[in-house]
Length: 147
Image (cartoon, rainbow, N blue to C red):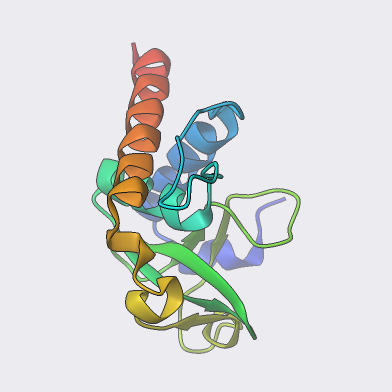
């Protein structure tokens, strides 16, 4: 069955979503991202994953909240659709959601300043290193699947 939302999505958006889904599903659970400023083990977050995918696919991303108060990050396609590669408290994903004004996504995904969402941690060296490590891991997966 083709989802109803497909009538609002471009072929390009669907293709990029499918590529992202394959990469995320193939990402191993055991990537060592090192430790943060406090010496605590870095756990893969939506914020890290979104930035890595944005680099790979030259997509925009947004930081904010998943309604009402979960700090979150997501991708935006060139046509403004939302790709949520690591949805909060949801088994499954990535998800693609119509980003139009009439979509419920407008009430669910609430953009805010990165500084507000992260309290400044997104610019710290440990966070940037984690993004680089995930980007490298995703590139390796992509090379294996396309080669």
